Amino acid sequence: MVELYVTSTCPFCIKVIRAAEAIGLLEGQDYLIVEAGHGTPGRKKVVDTGGKSMVPFLLDGDSWMYESDDIIDYLRDKFSS
Image (cartoon, rainbow, N blue to C red; front, top):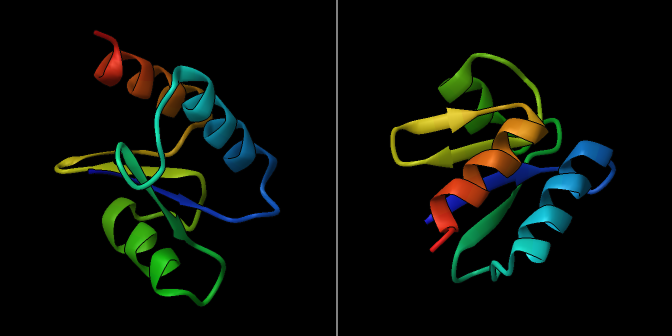
């Protein structure tokens, strides 16, 4: 399952979540939201995986990325049928 690491105050994170909803994806079925505020296990995973303390962050198996527009494009490509 695709994991989206976000914070509730990040406008780029909100953009990704809204885009996922607009695509028709369902949280808990197509993707999982992980809280990644400073000091959280989610933020540690982001840094350990990608090397930067930055959100939004997508993790899908061995694939990962930071930029909101790239994440939205990835979700569209992955879930288009």
